[in-house]
Structures are given as C-alpha cells and as structure tokens.
Image (cartoon, rainbow, N blue to C red; front, side):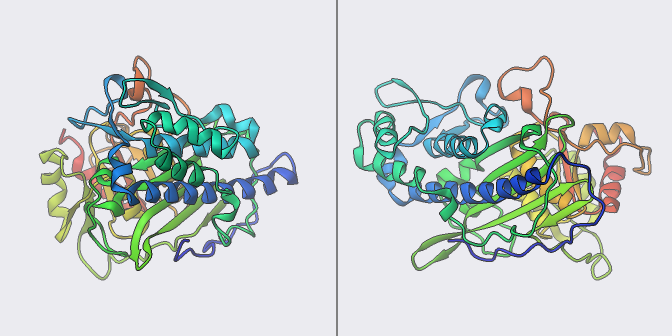
Length: 407
C-alpha cells in the first residue's frame, strides 16, 4: 500500500554497544518492522475516516482544559486519533508485553458521544466487540463503527511486505525502551482536508502535513533510538490516497535509515533554507530572514511535517521559539534526524550554553523520559524551551549565533 520505501542506506558499523543476548537483536528488528506495519495500519484508519463525509462529521471533538494546546484557540481531537493511539498500544503490547506500561500518546482515550455520554475507547478482543464499543461513540451508527473496527482488526503484519529492515541488527532490549505516539500530527489540517502541495515539495498546508509519528527511546537516558513516520496522504492515485513511510535507527555506532541523507548544497547556493510556523515570533523571522536565500524563509503546518522537511532536505533547519510541541511530536522524527547525522536541540538551553559565536560544549539534545516539573496535563511533556531540528552542526551553529541575545 506504500510507495517509495527504500533499503537502508547507511551501513552498520562494526563497533556496537554490548547487549544482553542475540535474541534481543532479533526482537528489536521485529519491533521496528511491527512499528512500520502498525503505522501503515494507522494510516489506513486515517484514510477510512476521511472517505465517508457523514462518518467524519461524527468524529471531531474539541479538547479542553489541561489537554488543550495553548497555541491554538481551538484544539481538536478526532476519534481517528484516539482509535489509532489505542490500536498501536494494543498491537505493540500484544507482541511486546514488557513494553505495555511504557507506551505513551498524545490523546486521552475518553470520548464523548452526541448524548453527552463519556466512553473509554479501547481495542477489544474481537472485531465485533470493538464495533459495538465504537457504535456507542458514533451514536449507534453501526455501519461506521463496523468500518472502523474492520480497519482496526486487520493483521498489522500483512500491511507491509517489504520494509527494508530485514538485515538490521539492533542491540537493544525491549524492557529498556519506551514509545511515544502522535496518532495524527497536524490534526487541524487532517480535519480541514485541503488537497494542496505535491510529492517531493514542501507542503505548507493540507492533508500531506498530517503524519503518524512513532518514536522509541531509552528509559535510562531518554535518548531517541528508533523512529517511524507515516504520511497517509502522500499522493493521490486513481483509487484514492496513497501513503509513504520513513524510518531511522540511531544507537551508539548504529546508524540506519530508509532515507538518503540530502546532499550538502551550500556550495551551489548561498544562504540557508529555514522552515517556521506562521505564528513564529517576528524577532525570529527578522533574525533568520537575512540568512536565507530568496524565498527560502518558508512556513508550514505541523511540527512533524516541518521536521520531515529537514529530514528530506526540503529545508536546512526548523526553528521554533515557543514551547508548543510535545514529546510525541518530536521523538520519532528526532530519531530519524540522528540516524542521518543530525539532531534536535532545546533552543533555550542551547542559547544559554553558547558564546556569541554560537559555540558551546552542550548542544542540549531533547530527551524523552522525564516530565517537566510543576506542570499539569499535556504541559508535563512539552518541549518548553522550543527547538531546532537540523542535519548539519554548522547550520545549527549559524542559527544559534544569529538568535543569541535576540529574545
């Protein structure tokens, strides 16, 4: 169902960290393949939810209180978000039960139906039982509930036949890992459903910005070690929307990815290409604008989408000065960046630790294992200091130097 997936492009180096047993290596390759399969299953659920207008109208609910992203006046979640998150939790937990208590996501699994009744959305033991539960959310719409339940209970292992991960050896143990899920990043673009942009170009808005993001991190350090990005609406075919997936692994000396590292084009063109949120502070826009070649200070929706632009070489760097992204937004894409030699830093920490030339001992890479102190709800897991996503350390240094002392 996917197009354009690539074989690993970076060789696994000989020196690898010690691991407990050869069995754990095999298991971790199996985990990556499973994550790719459940991400594609999630993408299929997202597409199913958009195919029927009458169904989609039933799915949207506004977030309130501590679950709301303060960046937006309205912050919506959809039943698709909740279903995808619980489906991934169920499928991964079934194969790796030692991880079930360490699978975290953006959404609460509580949903309210048209009668004002609160329903806890879970994946049941059978398709029939899941359909019955979903029908209570969908105000008794058995047809819609059946379609969703059928998509949820598909065998994830059959979703992808060629993931390009067959020869990977990843010396990690599942009991040492946690998972962050963003079931549909850029939910507002998913809800609007505009069909803009084209494959291979930066998409400022539209369905192409909506992504399924899954990241794996180490309990002990919070280091992101494995990431999967699925773009459910990559391009449109005569039979409907088709998706595309990307993955990366970064652990010790192991660097493997489905993505070719973009070529360094600085010798061919002056300046940088920077992608920002349209709501970014004017002082940041004014500082970075002069660094950019003409028309290369760009704006796009969705944190995951903007990081993917850097991963694919559509932008050199993504800068965000606000704490409006969360661990589920950044964990998976961060692992992909690291697999390509890049990274993602806390902007505030980075600015405070460098000199006027943008040089410093600590880059302040984001971690994923500890909540923010004295915060409630979603803010416990916010990237409070903002972030910079980059592939090239020199680019990071240039950006930090320019932003130093500006805010």
